Image (cartoon, rainbow, N blue to C red; front, side, top):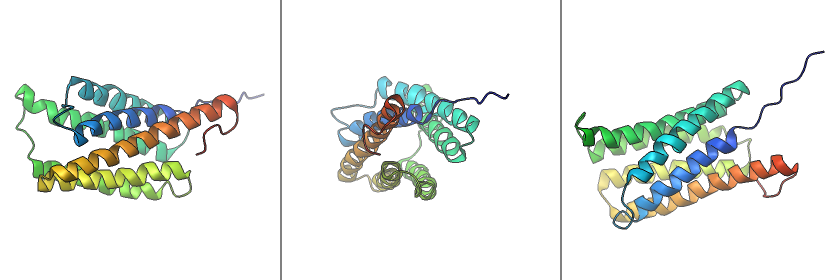
Length: 187
């Protein structure tokens, strides 16, 4: 008799890596003078936003979840590439990316996320909110970089806080659902 392998759900790990890193970076986006872009945010981008999401995506592959694989590995490498974009110039290894170019970088991530949003339409409303709010966040950040508007940066920062918090909420809802065998938090 063949034994059925039971695999854990890697999505909460990926959602927490995304959510917590997004919250921390967007506190900076909303209040750059009060909350500088420090090693703490960069470390979260590498370790939890980056590496943990890539691991979660690889585990989604093992479960046969193409959407989860694509989302977590892509956003994990988004965080890693964002940190690299920020530290390479500080190390003297590359020229600093212009604000206009960063706008295009964020814009293409917004386009990717817009298409990924359609993959959530048969999923939970909370996951739909995470992706839709991320689309808005990427476009707001792109506009901020294209225009240099501090006001749009402030709005983007707060919108990013809601986006990140929704991912944290969904992660915990899924963990508690699995732990208690029923929905403790609606999702």
